[in-house]
Length: 537
Ligand code: TNX
Image (cartoon, protein in one colour):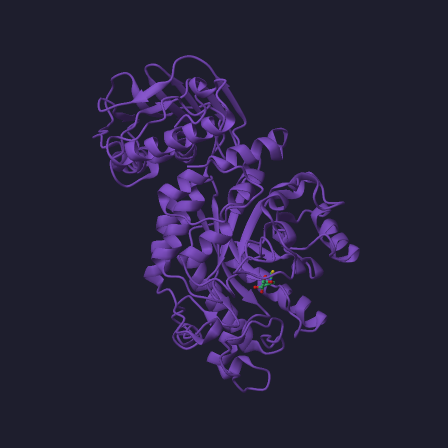
């Protein structure tokens, strides 16, 4: 709706003009209720996308999706699936048939696989009078291009009921490839359990911003969340509660496979984490023999950390670890297995080092690459391992130097600085959910830093990407997840995807603001940060 109309800029006294505008607003409101609402008739500018594309060259006529539009796709199974995904988004709101075809023709929406400078995830989007073509070397690139196309359409495209349109896509060319290969989000399903449906909903939201790694924190003191056949009580007993004493839950192997399958259909890789040797009360409570004193502690439903440890000297510990890693690796097509390693305050340093020396080869034996929280750099990270850095500005110089040194020696880094991108940190003092041990993290603070030079002494080439963890001591349902993730998560996605040259808060906040109506259309209740110029609707 146009709110500034030249006709009202007359010489009438201010008060009359004010009354006039009030009447105009009232009339517009009545119109919206009665007839079709006023529609946006200009296309969204080509670059107004989060994460910012590597380049956007506007030009030429826009394309308009109409009842005649079809989706043409190369005859590859994966490309057809991406086309089906796009059709599933566009059909409910446009009301058009949008047939997906694999034979020739011209115009319309086309998804095309072709060699070119796209890498495994990049794409090119060309829009003009005749149609929109997304070209990529791999299906992941087509999928990311589809996310860009979504954001170039009016926000109402996200609604589940037929909307009036029109559906223009600005003319021009977008060329886009990611800055980093690892762009992750972590969900802690231990402190509170989240159902498969809740995880899928989050996966869909992550995919909109080209996030490609879903890290699931599957075990902690408060709950063990994955079925392990050789140690069944881990899930049935260790998974039977959660923070606050609720009934918890766990994923059967079929549940977990379904999450992996769904994530893969959105081009996310699942990174499962079993946190060891600390954060293990749920396991220790399930099997007395895992404890050094042979006595099982009670299940834990509080929020303290650092009080539990696997028994490092006992052989049974390694039988347990081998079984768990073997079964989890067999369920996981992804490359990584995260072994935690944070806050092992009840494990001596010597034991910690000995434990990591024995456990990392087990991960390799089952064909996976180790990821550990950055405390792993206090032991000897395996060749090829990645360390996930979760320090803060005021983390000790010594600890930072230890991580930087490991990075210089070849350990890759995933950056998750807690005072920037921990999604469980409160935005302000008044945020009803979350914690504040790493400080308050408003939207600008979470966006305005550069992963490339963040950790002094770590070479830029060591940085594999970024990940936004969401710890769930205070988070219990999808609405809570969404309130903490939006609007910070898209900023993390942009830090991971967009070239450093595109970085800038002023331009970003305008692009971010344009996401608000999309979230509203999708039923996402986000934090309306006063730092962001949300459109008034
Ligand atoms: C620290 S960060 C933890 C988690 C907590 C989180 C709460 C990290 C690797 N460990 O155990 O859930 O703080 O913000």
